[in-house]
Image 1 (tube, one colour):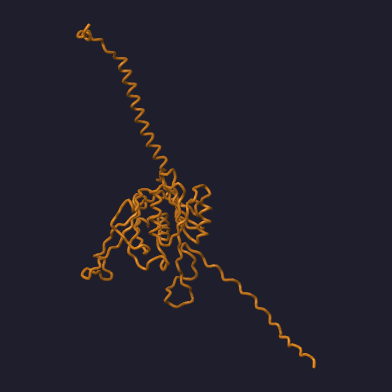
Image 2 (tube, helix red, strand yellow):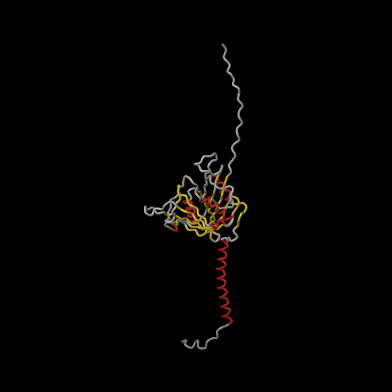
Length: 314
């Protein structure tokens, strides 16, 4: 008997592959797909999770006080990543943007030190911007202050802003940037799920002043605070302290079109030049006084005294 032929099955037509899903829009706080929804509630929309990560780095030849300030901020921000120093050149923007992308971050705090005297802070949202350039003044680190406040490392802060941030558009943008950079995302793996300190940002004389306070709550049974009772809670300062003077706001990352420029900003180089002129003017007045004195002595010569040699011994 011959071999039976295999029954050939009819080839089914292959289904065309479905197109890939569209890329969700990216907001300032991360990728957002659908509306914000509580994870406990059911629904088709996915829950938006804040995946904000901040890259903290500095330039070479930075002063030790400014380096300690950067380390203080690194200890206060559990969602940040510290990187090695970057050369402060004109091409630092492209270098830092590439570094932010390699470290999977969405924001950057770059401490740029010039002449080992002046500290500039770049607060940047990468890669689309915006970016703000500050001049940092009145720096006091935790090691210098030695304050009594102390809070748990990695706990989430409460952000407090003064009412001045709502007065103009550029202050609203600064407030939004500070909120996203200094606000620890909920559920971050390095953060603690409670609040025990406050970051205070205040606008005084067109400067942003930063303070960090511990929320002190009595734990005795007699003085135990009820839920919602704030009478017995106190604030104890922890540190550090610094002041931010906004210089420019750019539309891109480390550059781009200028959205705002501070008309009252005076660079530290101009201030030092004025101080040198004042010192030079003091020296010039002394030289003029000496020349006037010599001219006066020449014009009003003293008459020789006839009794000057009377008591000299021969």
